[in-house]
Length: 285
Ligand code: NAD
Image 1: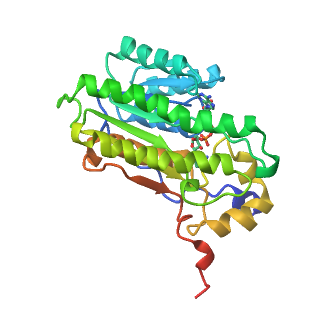
Image 2: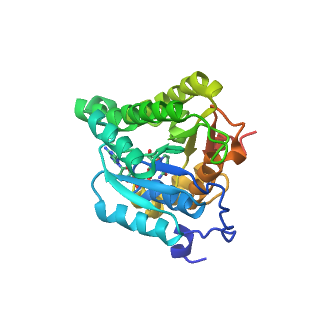
């Protein structure tokens, strides 16, 4: 096997078609100009949803995502908002209602990394990661829940009054030295998600999280293409021995947003090739 091939392992299985399980639903995905958000927004379009594509800086990326959704027959609009800013988040949800008239699915996906050992971490690095990765989730969740409560259940569209999905990370349970701000935000998302799920389940509002492992996106493409890190670290940490692709996350997110997962409340789905299985114990018995 050439080393080139080794760093870009193909998906062994041809992708199965995504069924139109979200037909007629209206979705909002934050950070959908690239990476996981882009894959999820396009997956929603394939599944029959109309989508608001949020972006922060990359308008061209957002337009590309929207065009891909429209190629699947869905309607897509783009909206620039910094998820850490209350007024911008409120304006985005207002635009959602003005455009689509309702909100069925909200995926709070935007996230950043500003890494440093803790004794070198600036207050800015700490605060900005908490603001985008945790407070941004709170602000979007609050607006989504307000809308879900107001609109209630319409059985012609979904059995739920609304579905809220937080994009977390395996680092909501795996500690990560040099990334304490990121891990603290992701750990915070876990109990934000569970507390909120407990609060609103009786209203048939479903709140869940997705925790990816190492997925090939612009956030980590350098790391995943460096031979040293790929061989010595990542594959040692991934029992199934392949890096994830954004489609791996998109497919699970479509399912979690659909009525096929109607009885799933307050759960985190780990999409990590087994990274959370303590692979250091393999062969250590
Ligand atoms: P990415 O860098 O490719 O994309 C991040 C997205 O967030 C971009 O669209 C960016 O514009 C948006 N964003 C950044 N700051 C924002 C802000 N202030 N307001 C609105 N949007 C903003 O990263 P990704 O790998 O696609 O990550 C997406 C999510 O998945 C993040 O929450 C990340 O923590 C999580 N995640 C990724 C991986 C992985 O391996 N890629 C693993 C675990 C968790």
